[in-house]
Length: 102
Length: 207
Image (cartoon, rainbow over all chains, first blue to last red; front, side, top):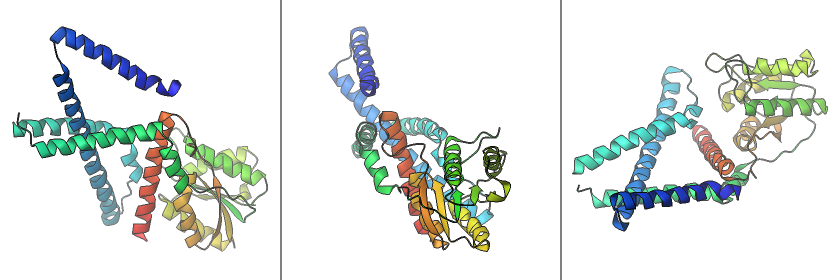
């Protein structure tokens, strides 16, 4: 039960949230579908940017080590800061992409 | 709004892939199976020396969880009489004390005599640890070692030390067991496994 508590909590608050906005603003199934698609696009965008950051970060560290002899640990790419800053980056790029095509 | 449908579909597919990946990692034994496939098991036997690989130490001199576990494992092996020499590795990290010296202080407090302790305070990577420690141990005629680290890190550390001419017996000190349970533990294990798999790949690339 402990393991399923968090997913169940998210399902419950999502259901309550949906019912609330449905009553408050009259949104329907089509809006929900669009919201899901946008969420998936945002996650996809984050994965793309995160992958690019990892790859570029790795190559840059190896180059710095080889060309300057200065040591940067590969573990710096393992931290939570890269994840969080990539979220911000992905949000900006996503909205740029949406705006650029609009 | 007129987004390119193909780009949108690709991003959506990536998003689905990400969510499925996280759910599989958190709620199935997939990370455990992957970690087991990569991990090395302990083969504890008497050897000429015990080598405890570095992890990290905080600025105030507190050993990280991994570092402490590895050090304790090394101390246990030493007190079991499995080798007469304890090699403690670990450098300084952004102004922290030298990890090897912090470990040595702990070893002395736990009744390991000074002459049984050898430090490697300079190496910054596993490859450097193998090279530097080999240079020191070959002078002392050491042929076999008990190598202490995490089971996933040992997968790339053992071949490095074997390449230096040692007979290597792995001694696992895990702070994240390969049979860890629960979504958070499994996600952490998946991240660690993927990181070590990438490390192995990079090491092979560098050879």
